Length: 306
Image (cartoon, rainbow, N blue to C red; front, side):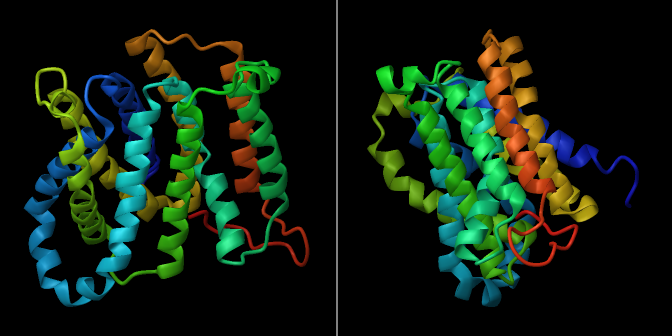
């Protein structure tokens, strides 16, 4: 039912996503990135099996020919993005992580122009420049010269690579347009990602993959709420509102994450977070709203950002 409360689906999805960023920070130095990624996938597959396994098996004739592409998608979204996020959490703030993640729609538009030959837009170019300036200001803590003198924290470029990988995931989803959709696609991607992560899990030192009172709640949140409930809210929101309107909710991620970081981690939000992060998100908004091509006729309104 398309009610006036449909916006709550993507909103609560972003709330859960911001909580997952906090979980990533809490997991730093507590459990290995490969280990928590493996455990969350194992839990997610277990939970989804209760309602997806039987339909997926019945649809195996369609799923099997597309298994290779599903494995690539699972690697990008559930192995690469998650592992790099957990690794980045060891050396950057939750607010920075959220800002880089929120760049995904802009990076998706840029990759679509590059790989799908879609016409670049004024918003993509102008927003890209504005976002880049904002990121430089953000990661340099308001002193761009410090990046030359001292370099940057490893976590910031890792999060950029993670966001780029997730944007590539969105582009490939659009390009391939697989006949396996919804929960069955997510389920098969998770199974493939779980198999891919298994060798990395085995290579993780035993102390960094131990299950205990500190790691179990983190795994429960990441594998249950962030991997099963969050996709349900997001998919439902996309169904009711469309992908473009849901993508706009990504701009809330840094704000909600910053508030959660203050409350649970004691991370201060400083001027460079507001100015740099705000400029980066304004660039994302420009890319989503200003869709007139650099050349040719105006773009059709309502075109979706993957």
